[in-house]
Image 1 (cartoon, rainbow over the protein chains, first blue to last red):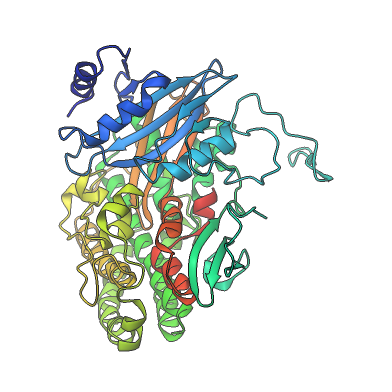
Image 2 (cartoon, chains in turn red, orange; image 1 turned 180 degrees about the horizontal axis):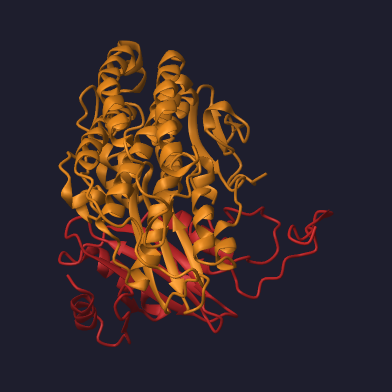
Length: 164
Length: 376
């Protein structure tokens, strides 16, 4: 099923939700979903027989400077089609419902997005840092991240290998 | 050190397995809550090898990122090369020449065999059978030599370029590969006699840590781990890329021949069968290698127009995907790397309850988890 057909199904089921389709070729098509609607839209995408998105192959966050995007790459083993779902979140309070109850793979993907971009997933069973130590400050994949001068007394500045 | 999620209940003991442990294949820690030899839960604690490759890719130019992609998975770096190149080529709209696509397939399949040799060899070694591993390393040495002919290096290849490959396929190497396969395919039979059909080995793995198909799909397992659960999902077949539609091969799936579909033994057998299928693809690719250019005309500096795409290839450890967000500059705006080991490590917590500690070694080996690929 193509992206605009998936969008038609979604708007038929959720007439009150403002969806938006993006992605001119060669980009992959993506559907933007408002954050409050994500949980119900995701459940519909998984359970509706014609859509049957049973495989969350990737989920991550992207810092778009004015906002944070949570991006979900979905695929259907049964039907063989795929779609990208995006949720735009405000930088100062990026909270979105967790989809780990629908797809188990979301558990670690969301932990990584929380760790590296600071997106908080409400209802996540185990939202801890995954890559960085628990006492790390800041979220390194944010565009405005500044590296601290030291970590537990270990300096983080290093010589420029080109100039040495 | 990671705080355990919940204090173990009375009567359970918390044991750290790792981060330095010979069977964890890299630096991973497992927090094991155990009652004697039986685990209540094994929680993977990853991140010890987090090098921030995604962040580094944001400050490096598109051609300069190719060697970084090698470092994602040092045992199967050709696939990371391929996936990264495919993502960039898609946004640039570059048509890769036919000869380059064939060169990529040859390199990929050689790398797949090399990676599965390590996977099956170390798995047998972790369970106490040392000899098969030495046989496999001898065969892998030949592949390393071929790789050296093809791209000049033996482990982190940096072979592919945006629009093709780094150098033309060396003249005469095809015959060498064919001769080596004449020798290698009987060795696989010998390996099967030595270890795959070994009754002690079979009993050690059959019916251990069964992953049903629906759990595998929910955890987004890919590659041999998913196929061992009976799901015939292979990107080379399901969502074909490159020159793969030109070749005949079978997708190896778990059949539960000695136990249940999706057990550790199936994951082992699927990898052995995949090596044989890779030989089939190699024979076709080497003999039918077309003449022509091996790299499309691409400028020295690459500026990718704004857009986003997800380049994915079937790696030896499942799907390796590069989610590239480009903003029109000469560097990626964001690069998310999705790897097979990441989801495979996540499933360990779900299948660990009730297993013996010794079986955890079999589970790690059978899922073929490679630590740097989890952490990136």
